[in-house]
Amino acid sequence: MKFDFRKFFFKKPKNELEGSENGVRTPESQFQDASIPEKLAEKCEKCGQIVLSDEFAANFGVCPKCGHYRKLDARARISMCADADTFEELFAEEEGGNPLNFPGYDEKLQSLREKTGEKEGVVCGIAKIGGVRCALFSMDYRFMMGSMGHTVGEKIAKTFEYATEHALPVVGFVLSGGARMHEGIISLMQMAKTSAAVAKHGEAGLLYISVLTDPTTGGVSASFAFEADIIMAEKGALIGFAGPRVIEQTIRQTLPEGFQRAEFIQEKGFADLIVERKEMKDKLALLLKMHCAEVLA
Amino acid sequence: MNAYEIVLKSREKGRPTALKYIGSIVENFIELHGDRRFADDKAIVAGIGTISGMPVTVIGIEKGSDTHDKIAHNFGCAHPEGYRKAVRLMKEAEKFHRPVLCFVDTSGAYCGIGAEERGQSEAIAMSILDMIRLKTPTLTVIIGEGGSGGALGLSAADEVWITETSTYSVISPEGCASILWKDSSKVAEASECLKLTANDLLSLGAAERVLAEDGFSDSFFAGLKGEIYEFFKEKMKIPPEQLAEERYRRFRKF
Ligand SMILES: [Zn+2]
Image 1 (tube, each protein chain N blue to C red):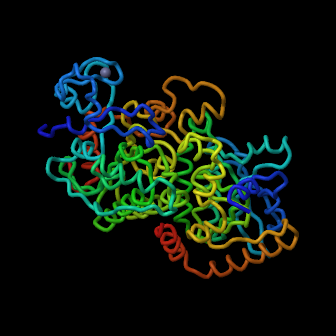
Image 2 (image 1 turned 180 degrees about the horizontal axis):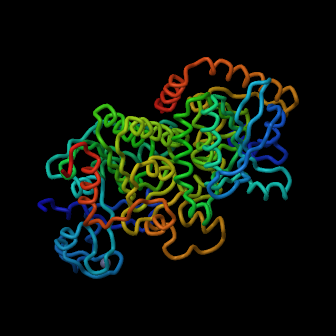
Image 3 (image 1 turned 30 degrees about the vertical axis):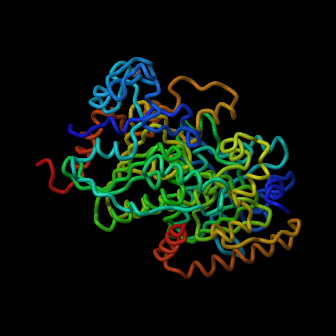
């Protein structure tokens, strides 16, 4: 694969679900350790071993030593799954404001836009996967951990509406800590707005595959994440309604190992299949092909 | 009252709960139990009855009154089977083309091991999706707390009405203060910032009517009953496909 993954890899934020506040790292900050030559080798944040950057890249951001999955940003995920040079971005101009005049929110958006080069926490468009044309959306952890405010909801709703109009399947790469609380009730309404758009797309007889990645929780989990025809979960991903810390505080007990991980979600009957990152594209392509009229013959 | 005072008022002891509304507004109420999958969730009370003779399906999140009762109703925090019961009865209402009336009063859907094991996310997601496309008139009245996704699961309606001292919010002000500002003492400030009062929701378009409270006298309930009856009477004249389309646009505007 020609695509250079290295420039898309960022360290996993320490504070996963609340990482929206301080989880953003710039590419530079991961190379603070001067003993490691920049961009040649990196330390795995899980096992601590030194891994060649090329090796990380060739392995789709999975640590070759311990199997740890690094988060992929929105465009890296699309590049990994879409056929080369087929992605055309849609709704890139959408840019939200501060609907409730929430203190500090304008500044936060501004600084995230500068740091990430993205206007908001989701990238949408059309592409081919295994030769099958589809609409897709991909959420970005660097933008307040993929939290959903007006613009994220708007772009996702528009993606479904576009797909309905053009009779395309939708593939959604989901990654979200939940609602964007700075947008209050407007954020909550995005769950309803996106659900309505998913419903209409489904009523038109079109396929929607959601790919739940780490983490998929809160309001996003309780809307379009779990409304797909086929729900794919990336190996090891944290998937649930309430975050594990909230549950622990509520029930005052420690949660069992593996609770709310993809394997647990599948075992309980809420994910159709678990996929490893390296097989994701092929699995998506095959599923898409089997939903086309003349396929596989 | 400032926003925080309204937050406290919305949770106040002795405030009428869903069963009081159902008892005051719905005649001939027959409770229907269970999701036919797992269990009957007592945080959500549902059934059929009449309003001035018009058959309706009624679904309410019930917090309970005294301590024993609150525990029985799990303090109005529903499990997945509660939302699945609600959806089952909404679909039944659609089949017989009778309106659906929901009363919402919850701090949020339950957060716990069983709720996660049984797919709280999926249950709420499908409740929103199915309700928003329902081909029969729907109305939600928020009568206390409208807590996040747990409230929205029963609020994807043609209209949302809210009583004067009720709230509807994406997160509790306590949660907002502690997550965003790491300071749980800023609850009052968070209450203001979240724009969660009935009047805020009206101006943001998330609610169509604010219902004036008078200490919840008999005439409050009688007046509300009359308004609900008139609302459904008008909505029943609209073709079901058009109703669903109007509802789509209601939520599309956000
Ligand atoms: Zn490792």
